[in-house]
Image (cartoon, rainbow, N blue to C red; front, side, top):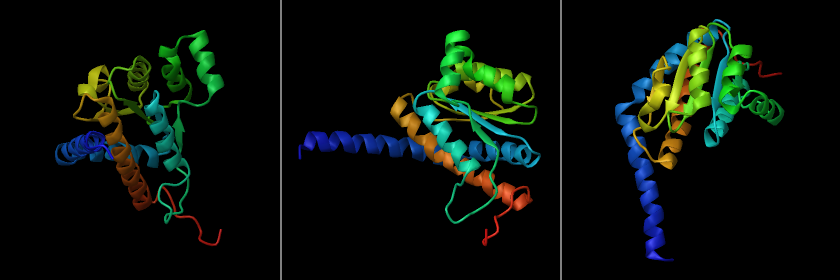
Amino acid sequence: MSPDRFNYVKAIFERSIAVKRRVMEEHLDKIIVMADLCVPALARGGKFLVCGNGGSAADAQHLAAELLVRLRPHINRDGIAAINLALDSSTMTACANDYGYEEMYERMVMALGRPGDILLGITTSGKSPNVVRALKTARTRGLHTIGLLGNGGGPALKECDAALVVPSDVTGRIQESPVTAGDALMELIEEGLLASGAVHLADASS
């Protein structure tokens, strides 16, 4: 094995660990604030909407599935209303063709969002136009807006009621932290909804 290649990969891991350590030491309160917005909103019957592009779209899909289906295998509970706005190829390409890609998530928020819902925007640059527009429209329509952002937060930050801004400007390192932060947020939401009685454990016999 080439020492240069070994050290190259090792350095990537070390940089990833360093960024996550900074998040852990300096930004965990942001995750808790986001959870404290989400739990009462969902307990009142709100929906959790989430959007992103590319790898962030995959993260959005991942998080929505964890709420809608199951997060932890030992906790069998009711589904929690969650929608990944990267819905399907027909919807996405129709909107991109007819209205423009920048309007895609905004249009879905207008159609699916209701006052009291949550919109989570994920953007590593903090400036993805379709995510920023969706967050801005969500706020004007009475949704709570939260973000998992990078690169200082960009214009998306000012459209969020609460946000975690990953302290990095390297795309790969930014993308790694929202996976952990997103899972932590989902666990706090699940715990909060179970504790409040808004979500119930399924009958073990069912």
